[in-house]
Amino acid sequence: MTPPHASGWRRAAAGPPGTSPPAQVATLAAHDGLVHLHPETATRWRVKAKDRVGSVRLGKGDGALQLTITPKVPVDRLLHLVSYAPERVDFDPRPVTADARPDLLPALAHAFVSAAERALLHGVLHDYRETYDTLPVVRGRIRHADQLRRRPGVPVPLEVAYDDHTPDIPENRLLLAARRLLRVPGLDPAPRSALQRLTARLDGVRPLPAGAPAPRWTPDRRNARYAHALVLAELVLRGASYELGDGREIAVDGMLVTMWRLFEAYLARAVGEALRLRVDGRPEPQDRNFSLDVAGRHVLKPDLVHYLPSPRDGAMRQAVVLDAKFKTRPQRGDLYQMTAYCVRLGLAEGHLVYASGRPGAVEVPVGEGRLRIWRHAVDLSRPWRDLAADIDTLAESLDTARSRRAT
Image (cartoon, rainbow, N blue to C red):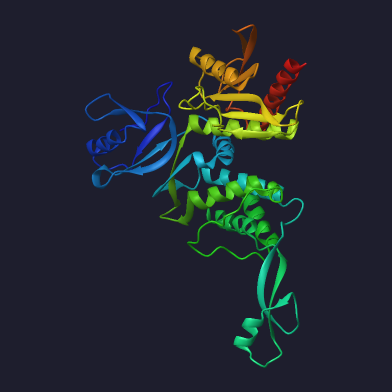
């Protein structure tokens, strides 16, 4: 079974070599949700990926193989998307082998240390935590029951409880746990040094015990500057153990990404965040608050609805609707879908965002008026910093269209 190289085919490779090809073909056929199989000869098959990328082990015995589907999107851009929507990644607990030289793990290390350095730019986050201790002086309050049980009639030391302003909080413990990236062979000196500096800055934070679950944290204003780094740290803990394997290989968990789902989740969150920073309000990615019918059986599923205060009464009302399309060219059904969104939400503007193509607009007559459906494109082949700038430009376009129609 040879990897396909024909134009238009996403590269998919199956291994390891030396096993029975018919058994491997049977394994792939049993997982037809991942690839298309097309016979070329009795022993040669062409493998075409569907809508997922990543690497995963499949099958048993002679049929065991490792399937690797290489994304068309460069690794740094793929990680940029994943960092906004890690729940769209399917992690497989069966380990796959990843050579230490390809970009995936070093790129993850680069992304994490960059986010962590930005998170700690204004200092390490502290919070108050109730602490039980035994001290020679009173601090906080005396735990009388513990004092009488442990030292009846003895005045000191004292069993006390107090609120300690400490860096040993879930957010910092999660950042510290991501230092396991130091185990990645061939890691560049720059991220390695940054990870070591991160460890030093988090002095006073308890390391996560081996096998312990990732610390739970709740996004809020206090830890907002940590959010991006924490998402990547969770990805590190969920996605790989990075233990050394044979030779120059490392054992990692399998990971499959459905690109259209990832594109939708990324775009909704990234644009929603950019709109919130630009005009305030409240973004609702994957909003499910509206139905097409009165009975509520047909729920509308726009990828993003952004809410702003109404000028009449100050109540939060829908102001922008956006839907992402992981397609190369628009289809008529997309216009029908967005028309339904706009009519139901009472909006005169709707926005369709494609993974490639040219921008444009279509005017749709509705009753006595018209609604305008804008077509935008976000080029995932651009470097991730340029991609982030494109998201800001897209948010500006959405706000400009809304403001122009409002006046």
